[in-house]
Amino acid sequence: MLGRQAARDHRARSPLACSRWRAQRSTGLPARSRHANNHRGEYEAVFARTYNQNISFVDAERAAFGFHHGELGGEVARLWQLSPLLEVAIRHHHSIDGLAGLPDATRHLVALVSVASASLSKLGVGRKGAAEDIDPTSLAAWETLGLSLDDMPDVVTLCAEEAERARALVE
Image (cartoon, rainbow, N blue to C red; front, side):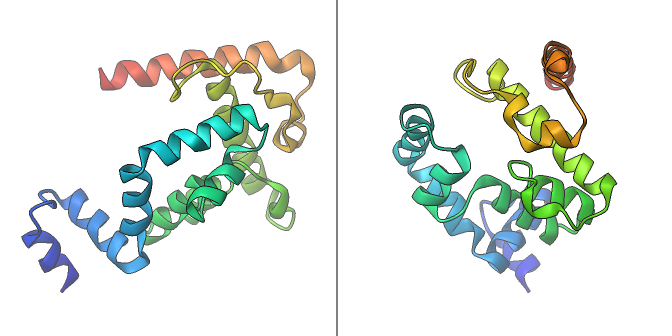
């Protein structure tokens, strides 16, 4: 039924759009995503709070919207029946604290995504500019991966190179 409704919906013109619509309808995600998209000023305030009040991006998102982007992405991954490992990595990429009971490989994947996300933010990927104050070495994920302070330049360089490769794929 929802699939047929999605096909009739003028906003859903592709199979991907139809699956997005079904996922949104079944979880209340449209209200969440529309809220963030239609309230850009509030989202800009989230960014400002992270810089000016020195609070985490996740905490600022949760305060503004009642959820953070990892939770939203994890729920979409679950509804789209993506790999449970991918769902966990998306959902927890800013916090590996609650993953102690999971297998090492799962914790390491989440830690890798967490370190890469922080490193890319430091470089300014997905932002208006570089976030020099972000320190990936301060994350619990850094220690989980067994990295040292000496690894920082190599990790950031590798992230920059991979970001360029990814950018070349879509240009």
